[in-house]
Length: 297
Image (cartoon, rainbow, N blue to C red; front, side, top):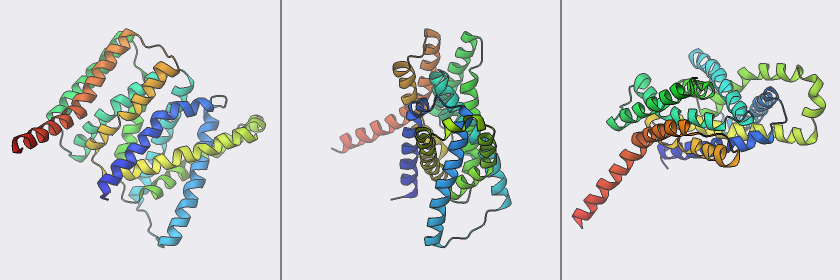
């Protein structure tokens, strides 16, 4: 199987998990966000360290990272940490739809980032799609009289993380493990400052739930880091609509969040942009291939 195919499968699995994550964070809503974040970081570090040690013992790999990579990972770690906080906050504060808005915008901005930073080509359909997304976001801001900060910060933090990850040479597991090393001191500081909640935090039920945050986090992140290194950012953008679609459905039909006509119009413009940037050219190519087959037949 080609690396590009493996990368696409990795990205698809990752976005399936991320699309369902509001349900998971709701299960932990009785705990402070900073406690969930701290556990997520610490257990991700532990699990990745175990896998990394076992893998390196078998493969006997001892490569060192360059200083530039370490600096990139340091910044990426805090971009990722901020993105995590925002996702948990959105799920526990009734802003799943707003978060999904940010996740819908991110793919088109990812395509634009590929053009801006990595000199990837941007087709006419992708340019039109970007225009629709900008109009949709502007309409929501103008109608509501405020900037949807959760959506905006989700876009900026994840876009920054994607751009930084794209520049990595080291393997995905090693990169993610290094990011967790950078974030762990902050996580430990948080836990020690929650000493009055230790009886709750370290109860059997909560301990199991918090341990699961490591599994829920580490596996998708390693898959994502692998995928982003082996797939064009433009191609990644197509799959990224899958996760916010799941989250949007959860927000409207499961969590019953408010969704008025203003947001509907804004979302329609953004969906039009997503369709134009991704589905339209793919469907057009499929139609051309089908027509050629018909002509040959």
